[in-house]
Image 1 (cartoon, rainbow, N blue to C red):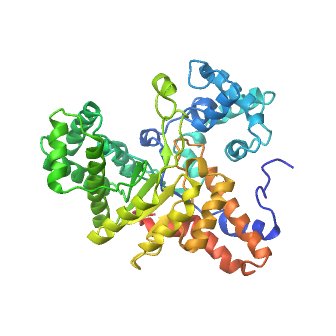
Image 2 (cartoon, rainbow, N blue to C red):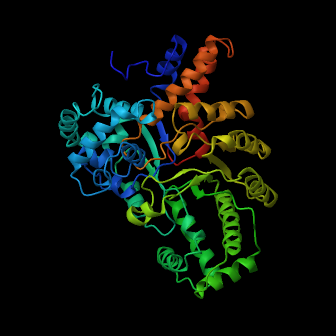
Image 3 (cartoon, one colour):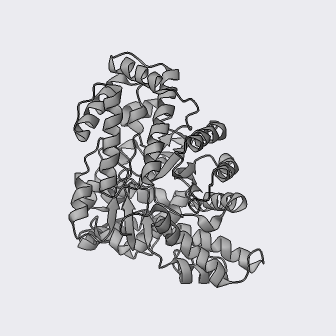
Length: 468
């Protein structure tokens, strides 16, 4: 029997039936990812397995470094084949790491390869996969169709051109592709030079010259409108913690003038500026019926020497242990008081805070939208079996699993769609085991209907993306 069998991760007959009858064939709504929209629009054809599978994958890079693989074979100048074979030698050392599951699930689902990847099978797998990658089925538009993807929401800066989204809107590509509005660079006034360059680019995209604070807000509002016109219905923010300090219009204008004039903003001013803008963006989202996503709790770029040598997003991040819940609740309460609380998904990266997050959302459900506030799926280091179960248990115990909008890839890789299958198997196994032990009714119609909703229908209804 191959390692990735039909019943992979499913421990009992009930779990097996739940998965194969209610989850397996559901479409995918990938409402948060980092796929490059240009590559989708241009239908990129990948040259080799390293290009589609290893480039940018800091999960794999961390494992390779732990196996003493030289950086040349990770982010350096080694050939693509050399990099892949270095990964193949690493794979047997990843037993009990989710990478072992993901690696073999992806090889089987994409390329039909059932062999275990290691130093001996690596050369043969390299040749076979590269042969398949040359076919149209494995171009950037072929892959989502292969996995039944209905819609993809990319992650886009307000200053980014929307030309590729506009191009896809006019194309015959059946998978809908929408931007998600991620204005993180608007907060980074501590680096005055970088902020000035981004501000100029924002003004160009918005069609106006930004000289005043009013100009700045108008440019952001214009871009928010532009995103909406091409189908955007989600925003996103990557924050250490939610803002806890909020300033007035006049205070925010004074901070803008200070930075615009070339002076350095203080730590306190950065904090209050972030709070002000988060309230501003939330109002825009609420007015248009968008969903706001908050990704909280990552400690980024921890290794200064590696950051200076290799750059950001290269595998030197971890779970942070900052206080979260007080500022989160204060932020949500500010929005509620102002009548500007949009639909919202809260992603937590520190499992110690799971119950705090799961209970916080219950304070602000207002009866207007089912599951208006969501405790988001396992994110980053928590998108593996154990932590997915932690998130599902916290959500179930403190809220309503039945309203959950399910999994998302949160990935830069076109090889990540089996993450949905992985999640669905974990979900069905958890529920099936509880049906077998009497913790849930032995009704596949009842429990299976909830599974079907979590896999696709809840997300389709919640996000209300155009024509999905």
